[in-house]
Image (cartoon, rainbow, N blue to C red; front, side, top):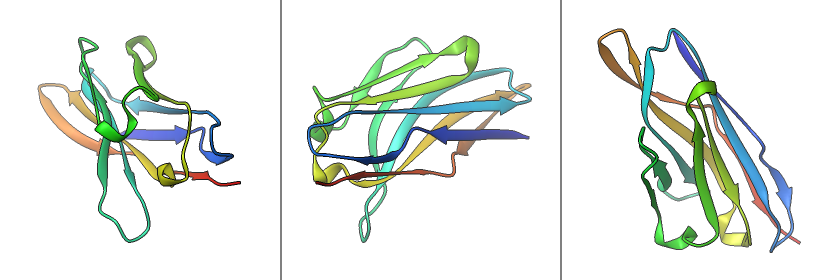
Length: 119
């Protein structure tokens, strides 16, 4: 069994910063792509950023230049550095990982962490 545990969410003022972490644990052979998604109240879950095993990245237009995704393969952890936060960034943030267990790839989601941007 594989678990993803997120941390780092909270309340921050507009213009502030937060750093989210998502650590994978369990019977992991390796991890392919890792990503962050978010879901605001009344809205669909959307992609925020994704990073491949080779560290290629892709971002939603709404966060380009403000958010940075990175990963530590030795720790099976993905990070999301969020700067210049705006009220519209308020959402529950989820990490997603494509995990190889033996010969098979599985998709796992974290439990989510709340990010609230408000003065």
